[in-house]
Amino acid sequence: MLRFASIVLFVVFFAVSFEDIAQGQSNSPAVSGWAELEGQSKGSDQKAQVSTLINLSGNGKIGAYVFGQSGPGYSQVYGGPTYMPKPWVQVGGALGIEKSGDKVSPRVGGFVWVGKRRLSNITLLEGAGSGFWYKNQTSLSLAKGVTASLVNQRFAGTGVELEVKVPNTPFSVRASVLGQDGGPTIKVAIRLNF
Image 1: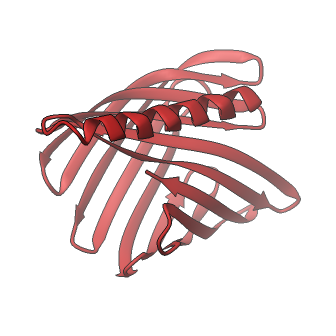
Image 2: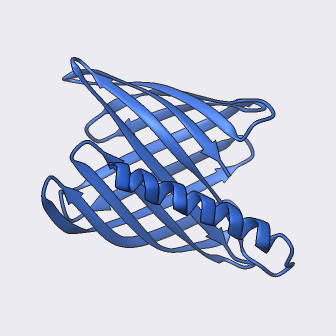
Image 3: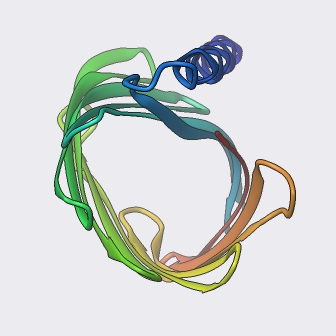
């Protein structure tokens, strides 16, 4: 996990540095994303994981993204192209690898995002390697810096999430309560947005 955290910090540093360089060039792509530390509790099982997402948006409809995640016994990283045919819809697909226990396997991922004004929806899908995973999140901006969401996530359940941006900082905090047959899953995270 320490190695992955070092890689995440390097990637965040590279992305922020690249963004600073790109701001001086009018035709350069824009770099955005986040790095996050999340704690999760379900019954007596508690774990923490780190994740990062880096988006590279070009001057047109084509872009790219990289996602990485690491927690106890599991790590993954994948990346690929994105396509935005309209300002309110974006799709992406990616290839990568995962490590589950001692096994290293290929991993595929993808997403569909739609949004307009205060309402958006994103569906994330992953497959191969350790198996199929999904998350669907419908979000509504309630006020400046405050977003409420309905979430359905495989292995965690269905429920609500609240995200609050910390004023005058690049940080946000989010909390969710998701329920399924095995009891509620409670998540709390702090995110650095860039």
